[in-house]
Every structure is written in structure tokens, then in C-alpha cells.
Image (cartoon, rainbow, N blue to C red; front, side, top):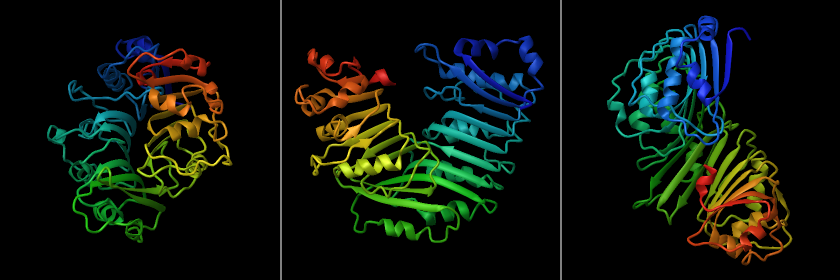
Amino acid sequence: MAGLGLFNLEKEKAKHLFTNETNLTDLFRNQITSLTIHIRRIKKEPTTTKEITIIFTDIFTMFTNLKYLNFKPFSNFTQYLSFETLSPIINCPTIVELHVNVKSFFDCLYLLDGRLPQLRVFHVDISWFGHSQHEIVNNMENLPNLECFSLNCNQDSSAYDELVIPLLHRMLNLKRLHLYLVINYKNMFIDGDNLKTNILNRMVQLNQFTFSIRSSLWLTNQTKFISNEDIQHTFEYFSTNQIISYVDYFHKLGRGECHIYSYPYKENEYHRITNNFPGGIFKYVREISLFDERPFEHEFFFQISQSFPLIEKLTVNNEKVQNNKSDNLSIIEYPRLSYLDLLEVHEDYVKQFLIDTNSCLPNNVALIVDYEILKKATENFTRQTTRNCSKLCRLAILCEYEVTDDLSQYFPQAKITYSYEYFK
């Protein structure tokens, strides 16, 4: 493809390329219009936010005819841009499409303050929303050129009304919108009425709206609990997409949650799945987490394996005892699983995955688990039926004292560490 630049660099080479004037960059200055950056991290050397932000800034100086930039440079971990301390000079009158990861909502606003006047398509992943940072950025001008906007943030925020909605209202001619948000909301869930009032009625050019929004609220003096049927009723007038929803109330936590999303679901993550999960096929999802105050039975895990056939990372959070412990259960397969987090579970869920008559695991799974729970589930590392232990390649355990040699003998193929930081 003419005008396409794909840089797949080691970290030090990337720093050299984008901090020095070279004949190579002089040659490409005006010719490259589309650029995707990948940076390979050597060993476990940390890359600072400052370094990655400088590289990003220098790109606009060196490639003067750039129209497309995909700057999500690290595939093996997430690195975010941040402009709060550096406040670099960025001015690119040619850029039309931009894909970035930023640290906070402030950084998103920073890129939309007029320095990219021709921007039509903007995909941004935000690490967190921050607190009152919008006061630092005074850009409240409309964004009439923006036609496609995608906003992703999987950290809880209470800034939906304060930050997200005002930004969307500035996008007068937006045609495509995607939102992936986790919202701590007032005394109600975000539903179809909310989206219709705040988004659809205000964005008249919008013809494609996809979303995954999980809103939560505190259960204080509730006399009426909103049902899933109530939520579905608010989407009666949505003509596009199939809208899925389900509502959960966690009385021990004192929280209520409602997850609404357009289907087919195209995110690569799906979190806080409960027993009320309505099913479906999620072919793009690679990472999921399960949570409930009611037990997950074997049939639930079978449903999960069918709905998410390509999961690679699975986290389970459930401390309730399973009720159905029959010996005649079908074997559940997880052919792509490589990371299993059982740190906050009852011992039944360790058995669920390690007993080979319950689950079939591939040969390269990394497991993180509490030592005492693991010890109970394996009957002090003597249980014969937990043969999936031999398939673990890495094991991270949390314990308060030195463990015996029985552990290494029971997990013969696993590299054992005593801190979950090993997996980060």
C-alpha cells in the first residue's frame, strides 16, 4: 500500500529513530501518509510514560503528510500517553484518523482542543477518568469535523454526566459512535431512556451506535428494584442492533449492577459475568471475568466455554460452595486458555479446573491461586484426580510462609513463584 509505514522496533531503536534527524526520516517525511507503530520491549525493562509520549509527539514533526496513525505500540502490555506534565506541542493539520491509548480523560480532551483540525476518526482507550482534570482544559469548542468516535475505559468512573456527555454534545456531525464504559451512577441504571435523551436526541447525524455500558449503584433504602424487563422496555424504540441487558443485585456488597450492550459484541474483553448471563456467541472476546454472590455450578462453566470459545484469560471471583458435585459431569474444554486467576475463590472452583474429569486444559496454562485454598483442593498435594496440575507451565501462589517440596513435586512442569506480580 502506497504511503504506508509500519514500524516494528525494539525500544532503544524506536527512541533513536524518533529523537534524531536522520536521512531515512528525511526521505519519508512527505511520502508516508499512514503509520502503525509497534515497539518490542526487551527483557522486562520498563518504558516510561514520558518516553512513549515523546516518541508520539516526534512522529508529527517528522512525518509532515500523515493522515492515519495507529499508536498503540505495545502488544504484550498496555502503555498510555500522558500530556499533563509534558504538555508537548502537537500540531498536525493533515491527520484524519487516530488510534491511541491515553492515561486520563484530560489527555483525550488535550488531543481534541484544535491541534488536530482535520480529525475525522478518533479511537481512544482511557486508563481512568481522573478527578476534575477537565478544569485544566478549557476547550469547549464544537468538533464539527469528527464523524467517528470510539471511547473505551474499563475502570469505574462517576464522570458520565460531568465529562462524557458534554464531550459527545460537541460532536455535532458524528455518524458513528462506540462506547465501552463502567459507570458508578447516581440512583438509577443507565438504560435506553438515558441513551435516547443524552445521545440519540442530541446527535441527529448518528447512524451507527454500538456500546457496552455497565452501570452500578449503591443499594440504600430501595423500595423498588428495577428488573431486567424494565430495562429492556426502555430499548423499545431502538431500531438498530439487538440490545442485550441483565441486572444483578449483590446484597452482601450493597450494590446493584446493570450491563447493557449492543449485539453482536465486538470487544475483546467481557467482565463481571454472573449467573444471570443470557448467553450468546462472543467470537472476539479473549479475556473474561466471572463474579457472583451465588455459586457457579458446572453447567454455568459449560455455558461460558460455549459462549466464549477463544478465551485466553479467565478470572473467577466466587466464594460460595458449589451445590452440584456429581461424578457424572461432562468435561469442559478450554482450548485457548493460557491464564487462570483463582485468587478469590472457594476451593470448589480450584477443583473445577484442576480435576481432569471436570475440565480439559491446554499444556501451557499459568495459574494464580491462594496457597491454603490450593492445599485444600488437592488434599495437601496428594489428590490423584487433579491431573490438570501437570499441564501448568507457571504457578503463582500467595502464602505467608515457606512451603514444602510437595508443591514442586505436585506441579512438575510449572515454574513456581510466590507473587502474582510475576504475571504482570
